Length: 235
Ligand SMILES: NC(=O)c1ccc[n+]([C@@H]2O[C@H](COP(=O)([O-])OP(=O)(O)OC[C@H]3O[C@@H](n4cnc5c(N)ncnc54)[C@H](OP(=O)(O)O)[C@@H]3O)[C@@H](O)[C@H]2O)c1
Image 1 (cartoon, rainbow, N blue to C red):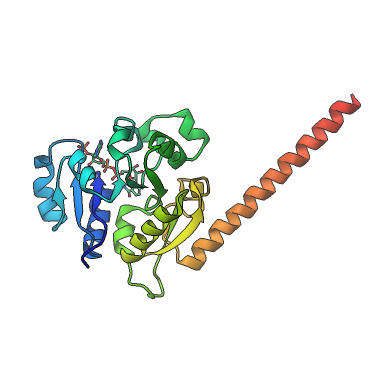
Image 2 (cartoon, helix red, strand yellow):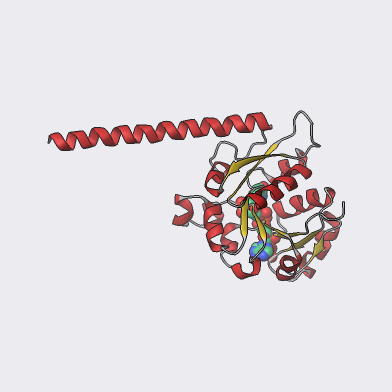
């Protein structure tokens, strides 16, 4: 499978090695980095991710076509955005106040939209964040398997989204394109598809039901505001 994009996996904790293994199995060349010296992850890489190259993050990124952010969100704040400039970036991170601390900006909105604003020179795609690392590996299936799971993909750059959808497909999942990064909020913790592996029809139904629920809440808010406005005008 020569010719597949080269991946830089930034994070060698729980998620990074799993995505690295799946990608290597699918034929992608993978470099993996933690926050420091590659020597520190050399043994674990050899044992747990055969085929991956442990590297300094900057070197892995420099040679990569696709960079996977598999580090805690609060550690991302220390990453130099210039390092990722011009790269296609998968944001697989989630905002967890318990580990990331309470960050108001993340409380109020979509974490990948904030990540993308910081990485203005990169094409950011939200993906691979909504399935636990164990399940991600265990539930990967060949195309056509009846219980093959779905992975949601959201991004503002259609070419980048297509590349990541192809990656998701190759590593064992049916990609579901949700739209821009804003639409990717359904993939976040608390969302309808977070933490469960769903087949494509189940996934699409869950996202649709959430959209209907949100619309009902919006309509109710508009109705309540109209009632308040009327009461104010009568008083
Ligand atoms: N765990 C899951 O099941 C899962 C599933 C989907 C998404 N996620 C998301 O993925 C992210 C990572 O989760 P995790 O559970 O894998 O975390 P983790 O086990 O704590 O691993 C974090 C890894 O990130 C590395 N790292 C930190 N700063 C870095 C930097 N600047 N450059 C390169 N690597 C760096 C750490 O390296 P050092 O040891 O050198 O600090 C460590 O290898 C989180 O945002 C999480 O929400 C997790």
